[in-house]
Length: 278
Ligand code: KIV
Image 1 (spheres, protein in one colour):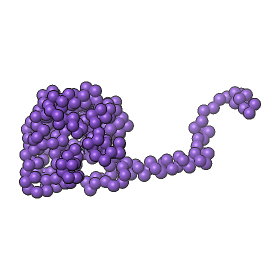
Image 2 (cartoon, protein in one colour; image 1 turned 60 degrees about the vertical axis):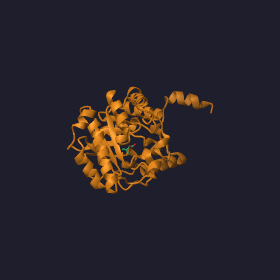
Image 3 (cartoon, protein in one colour; image 1 turned 180 degrees about the horizontal axis):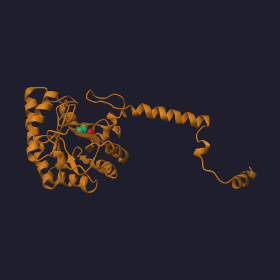
Image 4 (cartoon, protein in one colour; image 1 turned 120 degrees about the vertical axis):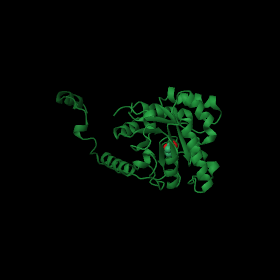
């Protein structure tokens, strides 16, 4: 598969459908890339699913840089997009460009994603001006959890839905190569997708977006077992892992691990010499 780039994703408006999954480390990126996934998002959801934090507000730029580096070591064909964490793009254009630049220069990211609509246009323009592709993100934006009063489906009333369409149009028009739409009614996911030139990537936004994204641990059933309505788990790896470790523990306790073929050996002479005095 040829290397996927921001322009090649941008060119896929209208199909073929785009796949994206989060990954936060080397083995996750290897697995995602072996599966032929189009984009790997080093999401700030790493705060919740890897670090066990309550919100994404707790993760910082240094951690996202570190996770992006680990993902990039897999040398994926997939486009690697790094999330700009909370407060890394809220303090002005200069600061935002420097932080996006760290994700690219130190982390190796090939694009960045940031949450928000028209209010973020100046920073998005500045980052684009520094030649860094930007993915937008509208709808349920988890970094706004306190402002939204919780993790709630967005755009359920006409005015809010229209505002969101205008936000997405502005992000597309300014040059975002794609836009994540999260936690909105299916009809709004469809409407935004029709209205904007950039491909839309949905998560809890219905089936009519140009692509879909889910969190790695949710798709693979590696999480707590309590997933949001929009998640489809294709495996139950957490249960498989517990069962495997229970069998490992039992084999240690019974003495059946390690077996002869799992042990290193010396020659019979050396062994008898060593054991002579014991
Ligand atoms: O951080 C993340 O995982 C995300 C996706 C939910 C799009 O932003």
